[in-house]
Image 1 (spheres, one colour):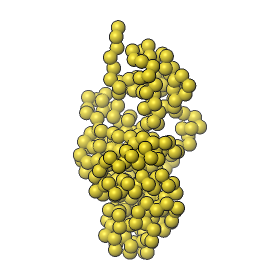
Image 2: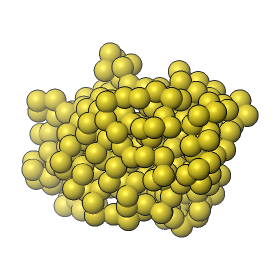
Image 3: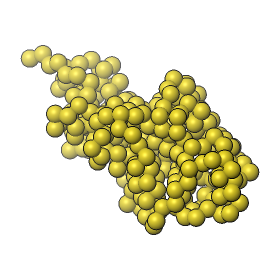
Image 4: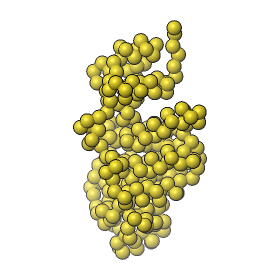
Length: 267
């Protein structure tokens, strides 16, 4: 019997088999799904890019063990990061487009978004594989319930510690104008503004902030008045700062001068 499956149906079936048995082979999937080897390999590449499985020679395996343990986990993040994400969620407008960046704050925010009543109305964009995985799983639950899923867009690029970065990612970012961008700050200082260690991440955040209506930075206490190598933007380019504690006076004065909305979370 000839089989006709849509791409998301094939993806669901591949993930089901990987999660149940721990691995799948391309040759088996070709027979089961009734598609070409090229199609199966493309499906596996897509799922691997979303952080949902790992490609191996001849097939795919479940993400587990040492590699899975290395990535940031919601369970090990601090209450501060959860509070920052909760405050960020309250700023999201139903029907809007949002970008969620890398980090535990972003994971928490994505998790909260998928549980919100307005998730289906959003367009959610990310380059961070743990966030992509949360969004993909939520989309699958929506389909199972007969609900039109939210629109989710994953930027392509070169993987760096579970984050797609580089020229391809920048190319994707240039094509969008977003309502809101949510970034977890590595460092925020009065003189240098927002900065980070990774030059490719800095370039991406620079484009996204320029192409958004509201740039929101979630700032854990450890990030105040730190300066890292690559400057993303001055304070004046930011719309809102959600802080894990009262900012030092110097940067508080600078943010006030730049007319940035500042919200301090109660932890």
